[in-house]
Amino acid sequence: MENRILVLDDDPGILEVIDLSLTYCGFQVRPMLSGDNVFRMIDDFEPNLIILDYLLRGKNGGEICQDLKNDPAKKDIPVIMLSAHLEAASKKSEFGCDSFLAKPFDLDLLVNEIKMFINPDPIIFTTSQQAN
Image (cartoon, one colour):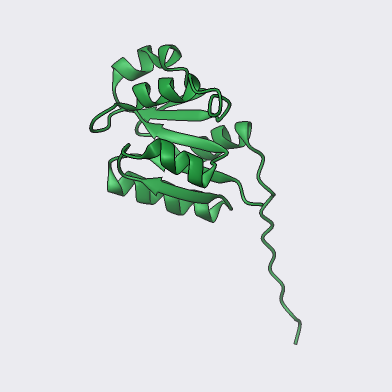
């Protein structure tokens, strides 16, 4: 079974990079550009981890994270929050996020953070060449 990651970021470029990178690493990724219907998506997709941008239209990522952590059915889903805003970094414990990465972030660091919370099957790359 693939490890499922829900990614919510309103920047299409960042969302695409995260989606492609995590898919390449063997994760099943569900990208979302908006927080609308995020709880319905969580119920349908059943993610093992959520990556959540802080600055979103409507409810910000901090508020969404607080709602998740206050919901008994969703509180154990790890949440990694991303943000370039100093306010978010200073309030991360208020939000209840499990990890916080400042933007811009290194993709390797993001993958390592994810692997701290979920352990995907290792990806094994092999090359085989036959001698002529």
